[in-house]
Image 1 (cartoon, one colour):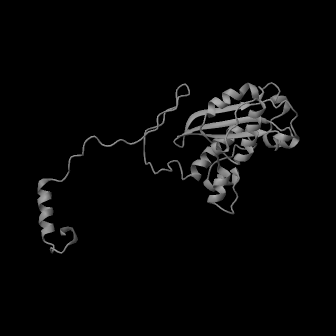
Image 2 (image 1 turned 180 degrees about the horizontal axis):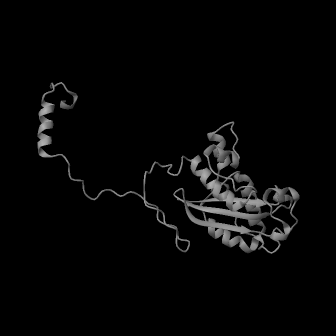
Image 3 (image 1 turned 90 degrees about the horizontal axis):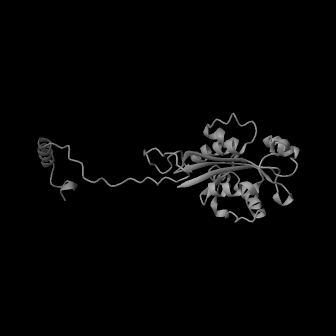
Amino acid sequence: MREIVLDTETTGFEPNDGDRIVEIGAVELFNHLPTGRTYHQYINPQRNMPEGAFGVHGLSEEFLSDKPVFKAIAQDFIDFIGDSKLVIHNASFDMKFLNAELGWVNRPLLPKSQAVDTLAVARRKYPGSPASLDALCRRFGINNSSRTLHGALLDSEILAEVYLELIGGRQPDLVMSGPTIKKPVDGAVPQEWRPLPRPALLATRLSEPEKVAHEKFIATFESAALWSK
């Protein structure tokens, strides 16, 4: 199962008011494990950077001025995420901006059902407790000391760890062991590993003298024993 943990940085809170995406970061998971594949892109919003937004992510107009516009990177972004589930903290915010940007360049919009909102998951699992990304890092003992400013790729990497804890750790399906997932080659997705039935039964380790001794022991019990019925 392929999932994409994703985060964006923007110029503000509302695309309908002219706010734009300035950074996208994403991390690929396969069977809930990071594959090593990531997507990261700075984007020129073609507008000024409000002081409040700059204080959050530190991306200035000057820094973004030579970066590509969203239209230029739209296909690469779509190719990376495909139809995989998008794991996002406060998904309604990022999906609102992604669909606004896609709509402005005449691209198909992302269905809301494609997103998994870790903020909603955390609030259901820990009602009444803080559910910000920093609060969840503290809860799960995840080191986020490098997060002095918001950054889309760094936040995606941290969120990937938080997500795995929210769903029960790195092996939520109680699979105790399995083959190491190799990094996909040329974007190919590895086949999902499944256990196969044993081709032949294992030979018994019970020796003949042990078998005879066991039968003699059982015979000492009364015939009313449950296993004799």
